[in-house]
Image (cartoon, rainbow, N blue to C red; front, side, top):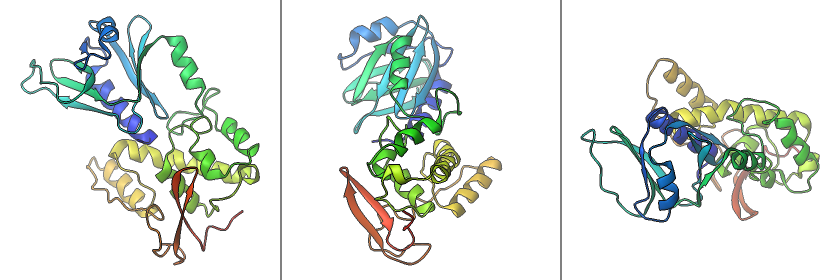
Length: 278
């Protein structure tokens, strides 16, 4: 399932392509035909994301709500030649089409037309999103209150979207390694200072994922990427991690073997040497 940075990156692409325009909206597959007809001819106001939820706001208090789930894909592509209509390939649930851009949605877990009240309800069910500014409605302290009252392990809680929105398996494994936190630590024993380190780290690292499309968790890679972006370059980001999918390999910090265990149905990776803070 795509992590939150992927949804924010996709929202930016949709916003750049369609905000302020009146695209054709259709459902080549037919499963979203009646809703698409209601959106067709309406102006797009903006596209945005919260965690793993994606919204496209249309005029008239109408919003398209999409959750990609495990297999959903939504690509924004140029129309060549401009003004044409590319053929729909595969099972396209929803299509947005302008003179210059086309966005085809395939295989989402959820694709619904909702009003503003439903948007608010959907977002309120989520935890705070590290990619959103801190506010009364996006408060990391609210996440810590839930974590500090729970007997579940910290990795389970970091993946619970009602606790923390947008964080997936790679970010949770890597951020726990970065702060030497034992992966089986119960939430109620996580210190407030440790939670602040986790939150601040996600706030720093996840925007790099939005800008590059690649999860970056190693400090040297992050520094090089930021420098490239500041120079206006498109960085070539290596897909390298400290612990994720490195079972049995030496830890980059202490040399101990990386361990693996399935926790709550997901693969968890950590260092058996330096991640001992409990």
